[in-house]
Length: 259
Image (cartoon, rainbow, N blue to C red; front, side, top):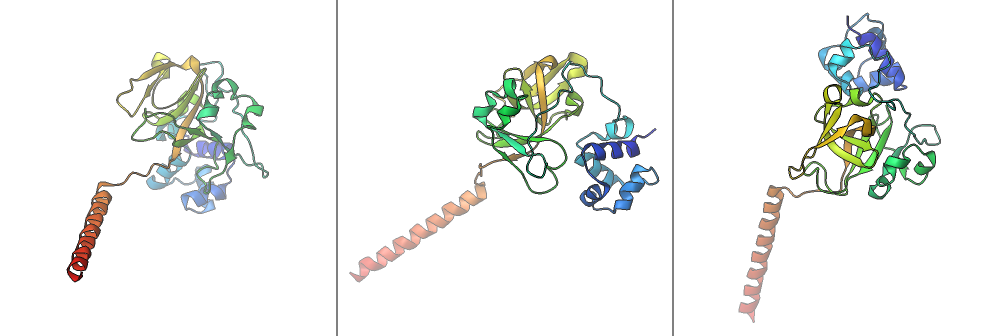
């Protein structure tokens, strides 16, 4: 039995989207969404993949798991609500947690007063409307070349925690005493642990017991001022400078002959 129709309706409602909003994101008509949810029509393969991407869920879970049923938590605080801030229209803001604020985040992330001290912003488009998002600043070089010191990542809150972890993807893991930005291998079901991997091979893997994990955020995007120069651009720049030096030398030679 496929749970596609019921899961689509459940996830859309959970994200507070109407059928037209989802239809616009998928570039289909609203009636197509209605037909999918009533199980009178099935989406094509391309549309199906677009749907699971929007809801950040595996295709297997989307089709074969009843997502409307509560998940049995493997740790006592799995459904602790996340604190959010909203704008004047009541829409969620993206709160910015810089490196200084991150020091206090593990002990204060449930305090509404803490968030009043932090800047908040919005990003255009629909990618950041469905779910709760938070921005965390990177410190150090453990995730280079993907992330650099001073970059920021925008993460979507994992409502189902370990079940929402995407194997091998970058997540923000909040433990009792630190905020970690790493790739995650999920061994919660087998070993009661998460394995955290750095992109910089100089850093060893970290094992975290799931009882120590307070929040998980799946990283959707990054904000960076790091703009490396490509080798061809560098070669072209050197060539241009060499040409300018040569032209200047020729002009000086002409001036010397005229004197």
